[in-house]
Length: 341
Length: 278
Image (cartoon, rainbow over all chains, first blue to last red; front, side, top):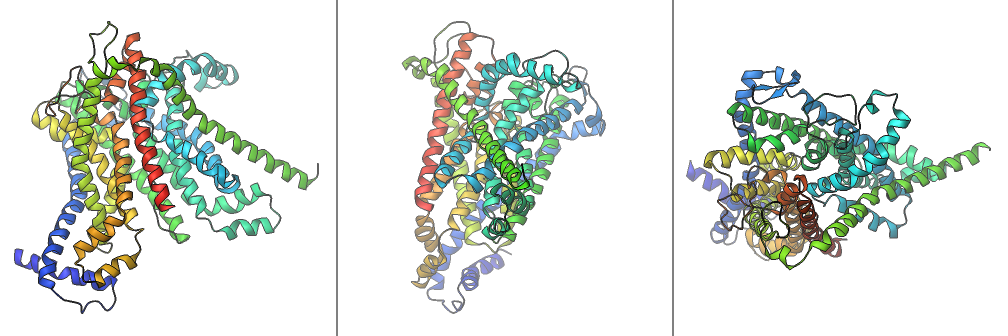
């Protein structure tokens, strides 16, 4: 078995060389001498490459086995129950799931128009001299650690929202149930706004990359037909990149769903379902951050691991969908992937 | 207003709205940096960088324990994560046809999108639960897990920029494949790989969520990775959510230090790449 494997690996340098260099398969000088180095080299790289899938597999297994206790005890009721009481060992994750989905949705609602506007402006309108510093500044937002957003949110954003923005919203839109009730500082809306700021650079930079792959002929054709520059951008360029832009938005959604620290610090951390956006809520990531280190019972730990496992599965699905959409656009325009980071 | 004027007018409005979007998008960055400097800079003195915390309620004290902790945890994470990430990146760039490459590439993308808190839970169940105590090393493992897929993807993308003719020339001169890879291909894009690694280090240096229940945090100076350890982001979190004015002051100063470290690393990395590859 071992012998067979070594034999196959020893021949592989020539095979690989032959794939990339047509006609080189005959070159065989000093094979014994060089194949040992090649063998060691390839083995080491293979070990590194294998480690990634192995680690992910291990991660999935650990999360699954950690949450099995809660899965067996609560089953599907875990997702529909709305009481979370570690002392009575009752765990229902509905307010958490609701909070995660609601904050992410609101964040996208704010961030998508902004980041699309910036992306279209930068690719279609801005002078090259402006383009680089602006996108650099916005991408710098992505480098700021989440906990710093949280700190800024607590001591700058929330006092500002509470004294000016929230009362204004309540005055103007108070007839809607979303804007009624007592105004708290730490609230679903505050968390959503900070999330919007955080996901904006991702959506902006990926949509910009996607828009850049749109062939110049698209906009030239529209301009030649008498379209204004905005009409060319909106009717010829954006539709061409549509699925890539949707991919960018979904990528932002993936970020928003899993974002932990800033949300934990701003959402108020209360296990409650409330229609009002001014009321505190909770999110899946936040409950793990708050309770995991202090969880005393196995079932509590297991319930939190179950939440983590659910969050993991959801983000994997969301990200896979995003990659697929971005990949489709970049493949069509004949450029490699590379969008995303 | 005739139709043509209306279309021009609409176009102008939309451009104005987009310029507005740019302003709104850049504003948070300026506000965040401005607030950090305004509230944090005055607390940066010698004691801040050389003292450990004083008991709650008293004023003074510093965060040297967290600076040392971050250096050690992130350093250890780099020692684990960078070789694996770079190795995997070289593998997928050098053997693009192999099935392992497509699996690894896909898995790395999945892991890049995984919330960091989930990685923290994994490190807890894997290491902390088995060892029975929190430790800085568990935090390093969690951070390494976040670094590996990032470093792998950037390494791979940068190696793919190396012209094929360079590789062929080395092979034609009789270089074995491993020397071609290491002394020609990797050597050529070493600055790019360093940049990618720096960016990954900068990114994980600011991570809090994976450290919450691995490194846990500590109020004391410690050099033992096998025990609970402080880190800058954890300190910001503790101080920001605590009840004391004095803690809030320290939180701003610590956050300023943290963001300076992260921004210097990532700006340096970006500038280095720009000069070489654009």
